[in-house]
Image 1 (cartoon, rainbow, N blue to C red):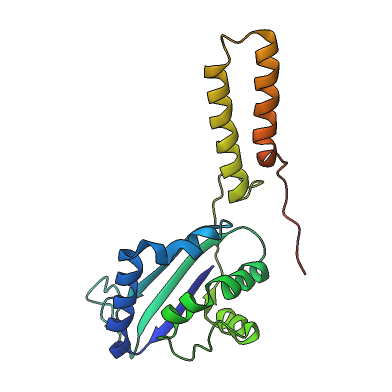
Image 2: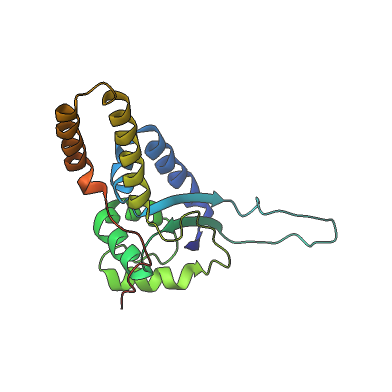
Length: 188
């Protein structure tokens, strides 16, 4: 998802301070990190005088606003993503987007969804290295691989009876991370 929202230039320093604090105080990022279906989320401020001027023939733009750009990659449907954002991160979203023009707040969800649909731009191209696996699937596979590597290192000198017990313990330990990948269900 890509969203671009205008901000009055006098508001930009306040948002830069918010971003500084979010970067400096790592626990403030915990809720976003816990939303494991999000691969990537980034906000960028572009000042009204920071837009590229590629040649002298290109006229300079006289913009009234600075702009807040938001980029994100996620698993699931758009509705699932916006619902989770609103439910889990409403305070953080309000702290960031409140500086944008006509931002209605993350709650109630109807106004937030309407706002996002008005300011977002479709992604024309997206690369996914594991198209049939969600972020949680990849994390689970890495945990299984680490556990298997550990089992291989520690089980080489076991007796058959010890190996059987260690194997069963290994299977029980990794069971929550075993599953199947595939096309995500389509929500309506």
